[in-house]
Length: 134
Image 1 (cartoon, rainbow, N blue to C red):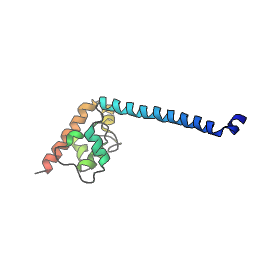
Image 2: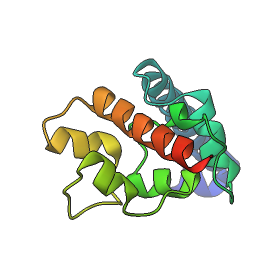
Image 3: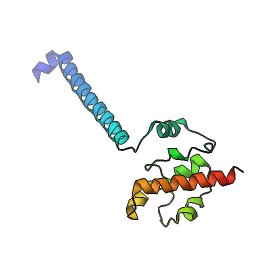
Image 4: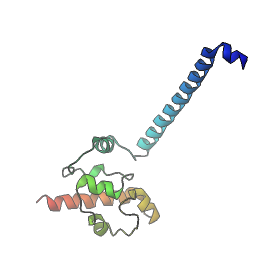
């Protein structure tokens, strides 16, 4: 303890070095998670761009392909300007958690393939956009 009182700079340097190592490890873990999500095709560049863009108006027609399994139904409704009940009727959704449940979670709870169900959501959105663009 007397050593720390005589050399407080050494203690500060040790703590700073430790915190820098922790920060580097956390940053490496973040990059690994990002790469794992990209490899699993849960994230793609377009989805990241649109989720960070803070869009206020619905996406234009022909963009339903950016829907990803991690998105909630509420998020899909908002970015595409869908009526809240549209996906319920188009996909026969029966869940008390709708619309605040991610697509993949809903699919897994129903025993469906999340990738195939995400494609169904994309098709339903594309159909809605086609019907309302005329």
